[in-house]
Image (cartoon, rainbow, N blue to C red; front, side, top):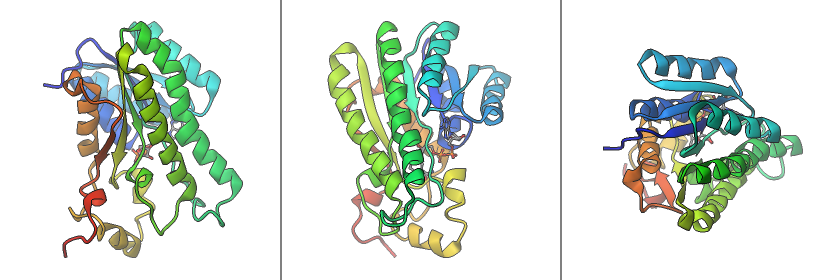
Length: 258
Ligand code: NAD
């Protein structure tokens, strides 16, 4: 149903978690996948798995916050695969030290904004012209449910970066709608990936989080990847500019069931 035959997908941060599962799923659906990773070994692992299973994938090693590296990464994608149709700006960080506005050091603030927000901007800056030349396509920018809800356990730089991604994506969707590019902000709830596992290693912290999720559990990365596949494929041809929540009901709930 969600065929990606003939399409090339560029996925940042696809050496782990949501990005990796999305790379697997897109490759199985027929896309040529470009794994864009700062961690070469992790990126290589995703590429090797796809190729072992009969798919097509290649690796670009790049830091999404680096202008020249992102320009080169998109250029390499078009050179190797003949174009760009799906741009999944997924790479993101959630470092220790990101807390309340009073406590968060400026260098942590800047690092998070550089990767999570500037990284998405650079993906769009270089990806959009390539997509226009390829006849259009779909952009999926990863925000988070924290872009639409506040938490008392503050992570101020992360939350601000995701709010920026959400607003930026809406504007891109409007600006390019008549040129064949759709853009949606993916807003996952908490997902069981390395990014969150460390934070939730304390059972008390984990329990405090789970109580707010109507489904009472974290998402699996594959469940988020299924939503990404829908947004990437032509099945979602009339879906653009959305705040695409995949959150187990968090943002719908006021009081959760016992
Ligand atoms: P993850 O840590 O499992 O994977 C992230 C990948 O991005 C890693 O392989 C890492 O090497 C790569 N990366 C980090 N910085 C990079 C950079 N500067 N350049 C290139 N690659 C870089 O994370 P995940 O949980 O799969 O998260 C993916 C996205 O989903 C992030 O944007 C995250 O903020 C968002 N998100 C995650 C959750 C969650 O609960 N896990 C919830 C909402 C949103």
